[in-house]
Image 1: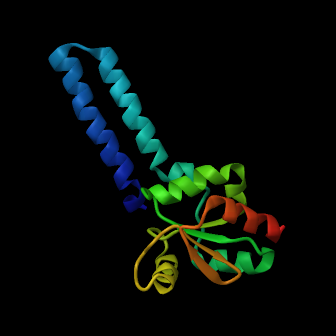
Image 2 (image 1 turned 120 degrees about the vertical axis):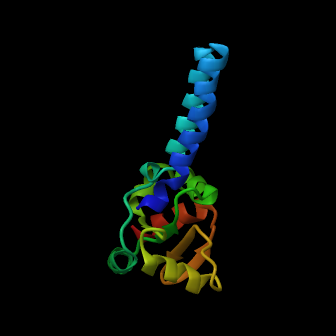
Length: 146
């Protein structure tokens, strides 16, 4: 759990220090506020809050077998996972999301599919893994499962 929040917390810290320096050193609260808002947005985008709730790998595989929906293995801080999530829009909530930093079984699935590397996003459709697929293709696979 803590590992997923490390990057957002680091971003908040990195934004707070210069913002405090701007207020104390230069007396510029407007610039400090703008800087801090930028870092808060960056932290929010990289936090687990933007992704649908993660489930365990076994549960995701069971649900996928029952409803045919793809399983997405991801981790927070991954720009490619964020790109996939944003480009999928509302349809992302219909996928089964597994955070590999929270679920060791999910990390093992990703390593098995990627020659020992934890390359994400890895989308599993009908038992076949696809590494960093085009979001339009994922949307198409989701439409087929309905």
